[in-house]
Structure formats: C-alpha cells, structure tokens
Image (cartoon, rainbow, N blue to C red; front, side, top):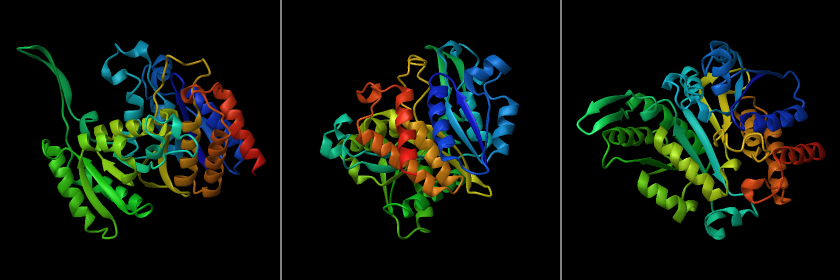
Length: 355
C-alpha cells in the first residue's frame, strides 16, 4: 500500500501532520508513505506548483492525502503558476471527476451551528460534486470592451461528463437513503438544461432512487431552512464548491468536513483517490496552532475506506473524532482553546485506548 502525502501551503502542513500521526498510530502492515511538494511551496522549490515528480508520485500511489494550497504572495503570478493549479492539475491529470463531501452534525455540537439546534441536528447529507468541468476548466481570458477590461469564463458540460458523475451520485445514493437531488440552474443556463436532461436519462437505470431537481438558489436557501430534506446532492463544479462550503457552516465549522476525489482507476485495494479537508490554506493563521486538524484526519478515514479497503480502521478514526468532540476538545474555530497539536494528541489517545 502506497500513500502520497502532499501537505502544501499555509495550514496544510500542520493539519496533515496530525493525520500522519493518526496513520502511524494505526501501524498498518505493508504501508509506504512518501511526500511531495505542491502549491506555493513547490513553486518556490521547483518553479511550478505541480512538478512532474509530484505528479509521477501521485500516479504511482494507491491514494493521495492532500493538505491545502494557496499563498497571498503568489496572487500576482501568471494563472498557470498560481498554487491552486496544483489541485486543479491533480484532479484533471489523475481523472478525479467525482468529489464526495459528506456533511453531518456531531451529537452535542448543534449549538455551534449557525442554525437552530433542532435544524442542525437533522443534517446528514452527501454532496457529489463534478470536478473536471464547468467554469473552473472552461476556456477563459481577458479582452477589451467599451466598458474597459472584461474577463470571461466558459461554463460547459457535455452529456458524457454528466452521465459519469450522475452514475457516481446514484450509486452513492443507493448506499444511503436512496434519494438524490440534482442541483442546477436549468431555467437560465443551457449547460444546466443538458445537465438536467442527462441526469433524468441516467435515473432510469436506478429505479430504486427517488430523484428530484432543484435550482441552485433555492438549494442554497433550503440548506439553511430545512437541511434534513437532503440525502445525496449531485451538482456541477461551481455550484458544488459553494454549496458544500455552505453545508459546513450549517454543521458548525469548515474545519470539520473531509472530502474524497475519486475517478475510475482501481488498484489492488480499492478506488484510487485524492483526499483533503474542504478548507483552504488559511495563511493568516498558519504557524499559530489554531488550525483544526479534524477535517484532515477524517479525510484520512475516507482514504482508508475507499482506496485501501480498511473499513475497520476508518471507523476507529471516526469514532475517536466523535469522542474527542463529545469530550469538549475544541479548537478555536469551535470556540475552544485546544491547539492543533492538542486536538491531534486527543485523537491519537482515543485510538490507542480503543484498539
């Protein structure tokens, strides 16, 4: 078993260090862990945010554990050299088109949500976000216009791309509550019209799954009004990015939510994937011990489940996280005083004592 660890920028190295401690505590036989540079750190060392050697390392691994990329000092670089191109490049080059972002409330933490406790208690959903298309990968540029400089970005999806993510979402829904909400803006966007029609066509292959459709603006409203109505959500790259971050606020903190980016490649142990917390690099708090490592640790649990077939170990991690939160071990994002290391210490202790 081979795991590539790309810590990245800002708080990325801090939170992935705690995930690595958890992984080492599990002491999995036959595991090899190797590290590579991404983001601003890679640009400074290699002149590019995604060096070829890092990409080769990812391709040789059974899974990738990723931290975060982004650095204010790189904002003026050409677009293709900015830190964010590392994660976009990995998703594209590795064929990782399905991003799974679970969001569920933790018992006893309802008061941390921006929602009423009884509403927050109802949250248990999965956002399936398409990763390889939409405006993030569409043609873009700048041109002159009568109003001055004009930026433009192309949003597009073809039927094959939508079918692929729709199948992933329907399969995920089959393993959950057999209810799928497809989010689009089909009343305005041609892209969304193709999206909706294709999802409807794929639905015929999953008669057990209840399918409904929702415009993205209504979905955003419903997430804060009545989040318990959602089980599995499938949507495009842009909408999924926004809605999954919104869901994290409903749960209580973006520092609690993990993600898996999967493709079609199968390894000896499971589905190859890249795993990362949904938060960014937060350079403003880097090095201060304020970063919450829970999302990175839970991303490791997803890695063990989906890519390495280690369900028992994944459950041990998830239970340990639930228990330390129930014990009130909170970082500053949850209103507590525990440092990044102290949260990691608590998780490791729980794993050791429950082995």
